[in-house]
Image 1 (cartoon, chains in turn blue, red):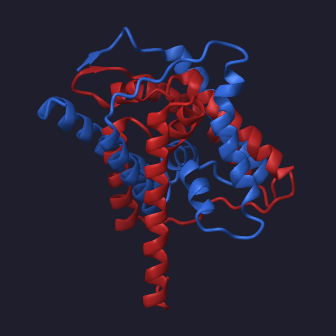
Image 2 (cartoon, chains in turn blue, orange):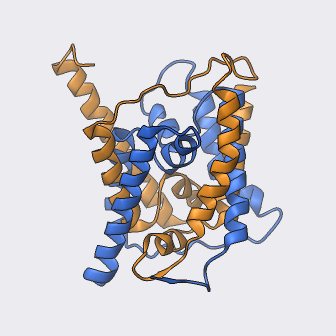
Length: 144
Length: 145
């Protein structure tokens, strides 16, 4: 293993992480809920009266974040190397997997680990482990 | 107020993903590629978020109602089962294929990326498939928990 010093950005990462933590804190303290993005989205597909507006608002905030960011600084362009076919496969797996596993990087990774939840620790280890193995297989074994 | 707080929380979350670089799949894949040249940034994002989160959840866990008067609905489940592990593994495989998890997918969609739109549409289809199977299970096995 060698560190990619050209891309490693510890300060920006830490600052962005603190913002994410503040968002999770707002959600827990103001709304009494977990800021789990897959759970918030998934709930929209199971419409319940009185349970939709806050979910839609949270998603709009996420999607609208670039429009606010651009008021202060130039927006960085995401580099999306995956093909359309790979994106469809990845999206399906992320959609089904996060719902069966009851959470994603935000719900289990950030909120769950903050709550010292054993369930979230297991889930985070499982999805990170699977992510490490998948990238190892695609990049180093298959050479994609 | 709850709706406005949710909008604000979503906005701050999205800004955090942009500032940290995590809205960029190439950077996330740089973290997942431990056998190549490794970019540890994602670990620092998690560290920063968890440091704040631990304080917030310690306070939230002792409250019976939120600051806005909403019912506290923090998870209480403790069982570790096959659903949790298998679901998380499937998610991790998808994450490793494209470098997108749900939040960054939505933020990149807001940046007008067509590829993010394809990812988010597929993700919603996957979530819809989950709802379909869950509903069918409930109909055929009425007493299942």
